[in-house]
Image (cartoon, rainbow, N blue to C red; front, side):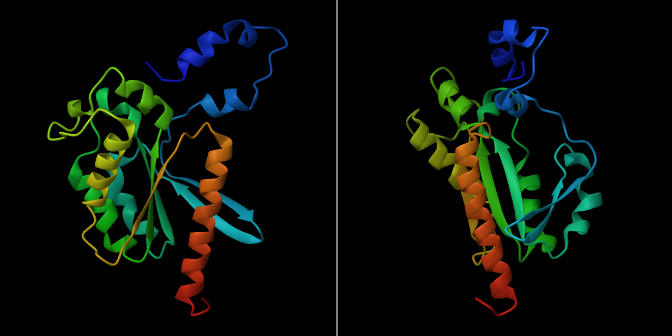
Length: 197
């Protein structure tokens, strides 16, 4: 079951009211699966950004990956709360993105998303379901450290840093802080590239 359904069922009276207008949280909890490549342009602090969302296109990755030559950053989102429901992408796929020649100079930003749901799920389901070789305690701190190290271990380039953030995408204040940090990092990287930093 979609992990946002509970929130909507809990608010069923409000949502079914004739004068219902979705609030910010309703909008954030609405999810549409990405199909194809979605390109979004926006400007922050007079700096133009182009973002491509290729989620849901795992099977077609070899066909589109070459489109990303000379990108500044790759944001990779992993729903850590789904470890008991679905398989994580296989290691070869994650490694292909991390070490692809198309992303050689790109910063890799990893969002370990759905932190709130992950914390709840840890209370009843061991991460050993997805990671049978994990031997640590069933705590958030130890589990997230293990998952972080597992993703970082896929990186074969000692010069490349993977920037890892634990996120709850519906927490707008947290996401804003993280995105501000990501934007600064991308700007600094581009300034270094042209010798201005």
